[in-house]
Amino acid sequence: MSHDARPAGDDSFGGSVGDALPGSGGKPSREQTAAAYGVPAPSAAAQAAHPDTLLAAERLEDLQRVQAEYVNYKKRVDRDREVQRELVLAGMIESLLPVLDEIHLAREHGELQGGPFAKIAEKLEAILAKYGVERFGSAGETFDPAIHQALMHTQTELGPGVTDTTVTHVMQPGYRMGDRVIRPAMVAVADPA
Image (cartoon, rainbow, N blue to C red; front, side):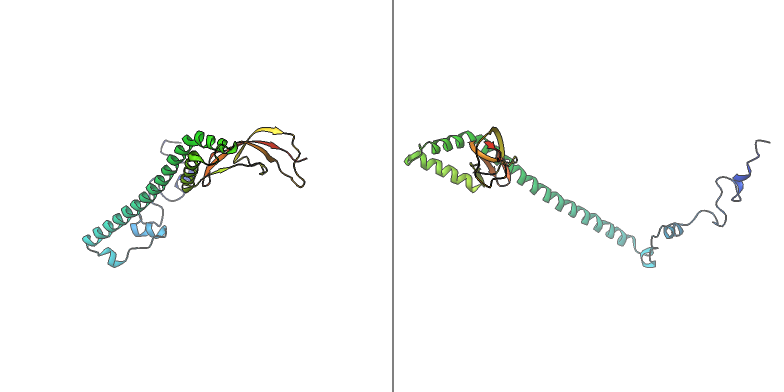
């Protein structure tokens, strides 16, 4: 067997490597390739279009793309601005939590009965309420780990018909702004019998 001899299977298509396939007539045209992939052939009007018309169509597509990018950018910036506003407001409220805790304790101990400090406390709570800040957590609520933090588990007798773990004592109230929990309520809980 010489070096030029090829195995029988290599020339089964009737040519050597690199030759066009039989019946293909050489390299396929652009139209044949487009048709093979299901791309419609351009119309005669499109083929004969003036170069300025093609350039104008290309520029129009570019303009539409840039406008869509700008609209998406503006929406993203507006959304990010709102998120940033909420984060700043939540940070400010977190810094006020010790003051709000002292006001709550003073109210529980009867130290806010009339007087100028009671008015200041009411005004502060009213201002925070405008921003959607509310205090939560009270004895008798069903324990929810999303808004309560259980610090103690007690063996307290719960009322009849109670079937869920229940808050028995609130050590520190929680605060939320809308759906966002700024601080969970620190509570003691008891299980039903």
